[in-house]
Length: 189
Image (cartoon, rainbow, N blue to C red):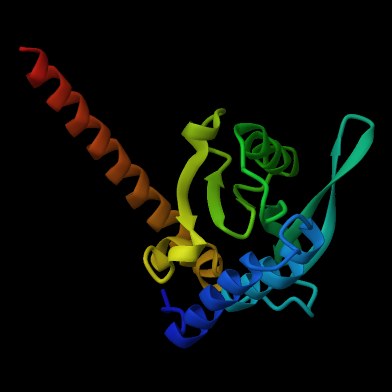
């Protein structure tokens, strides 16, 4: 997996901090334009090409819903991205919305962000937000956990690195849970 340019990452983090100081933080449109779209470009997605589709229709029941971005490879969506305004606190309902969109569209990888926090989900891992969660990245603290963010880079999706990295993260989380359970058992005795 190619590492992201550290200067570009630092510029991106600076732009998040500057945006946070504006009166635009309640606007989803401004969050998308000022943070989400530059992030997608940083991750190698070409917003001017057909590989990024805005307001991608997702048919649930009789009425169409729209996901903010569909990242397309070989003419089919491979990642769906739902964005909320910068000042919105992301909830389980938001996560379930994007996971549901992914399932309906048959898209394994979905992302939820408000421009501060970015969560990546694998819709094939289960039903709940917790089961589907791959990682959560605090965008304001980049470049820490940049490798987690890099999961949804164009290259990572194209090469399948997202699959391998997601598996490693899942195994690590399972090991941590097992250690925590063992510690709890030991403290009870």
